[in-house]
Image (cartoon, rainbow, N blue to C red; front, side, top):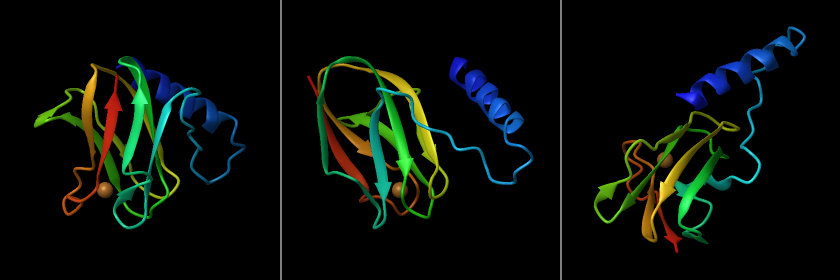
Length: 124
Ligand SMILES: [Cu+2]
């Protein structure tokens, strides 16, 4: 919820400073975020990520492809609750916090047809 409020505020701010331009505001991932990028070919930009330190982490998600992708996390067969990032089009970014325990996670895009869009994340 806090993230949504600050997102809206930053959009309003950018719109106010935009001088009436028609282009969408450029959102960026927060400094220090762990960035994953969706690339063409229904892939993430790496097959494995990490290791990252267990605990709170902010993910950034960038889209370098031309279609919509999502990012969710699973540990074994269990999806990490309350975490899903979504990038609609080329140049879109999203970000959000999550807290992870040590272990091996799977990064998944759950857009239908993107079943092969998976990668591994090591948390230790
Ligand atoms: Cu995808």
